[in-house]
Image (cartoon, rainbow, N blue to C red; front, side):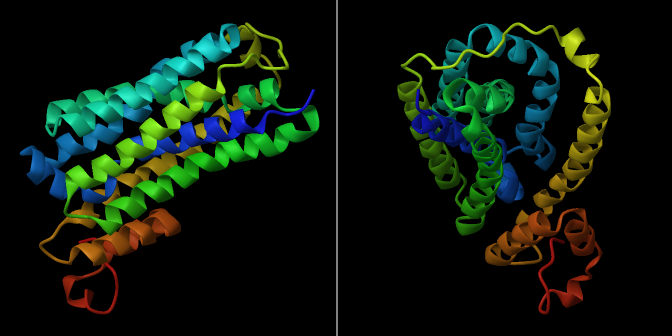
Length: 269
C-alpha cells in the first residue's frame, strides 16, 4: 500500500485554518474593539477561548479520534468552516464570539490528530515527515494570521473574510480527502490512565505545559500592536512580526521603548 499524501496535506491545511481562526483578531485588537463597540479585553476573549476549551476538550477529543478517526475529523472540519462562515456573514461581536467558539472546539480535534493521521494514511517510513508537515502547518497558520492583519490592519471585515476563505477552503479539501478509508488502522481506544503511566509522559506533559505557558505570556502583547495613537498601522504590523519572531523578549522591549524613540525603532506602545 502506498502513502496517501493528499490526505495529510489537506489535514495540514486544516491545521493552518485553526491558527488563522485563533489569531484572527490578534494584530487588529484595538481596531476590532472600535469596530464592534466593545473593550479590548472583550476582543482578547476571542483568542482566549482557544486555550481554555483546548484544556477541557483535549482528552475527550483524543478518545473520539481513537474510536472514530474520520467522523471526528469531519466534525472538526465542519466546525472550522461554520465558525468562519458565521464571522463573515454577521459583522457583529456576538457572531465573532460564537464563530470563535466553534473554531475553538475544532482545534483540539485537529491538533490531537497530527500523529493519528500520519499513522493511518502514511507508510511507516513516511510518518515522521507527515507528522512534521502537520505540526509545521500550525506555525504557518500563525504567520498567515499575523501577515493578513499586518497587511490590512484597519479593515476588520477584510481580515475576517480572508481568514474565512482559508478556513472554508481547508474544510472542503479536508472533507473531500476523508472520503476513503485509511489504509492502516493503528491500535485504538487507549485509556488515558494507561498513557499517564507510560514512563516519561508526565515529564513531557510538564515541559509542554511550561513551554506553552511561557509562549502564551507574550501573545497578549500583540494587542498593543494595533493602538493607533502612537504609531501608524504599518509600523504596528511590523511590531507584531517582531514580537512573534523574538518571543517574550520582543514584547518586553517594545513595552519598554519610550515614545520618543518611535522614529528610530518599531514599538508597540
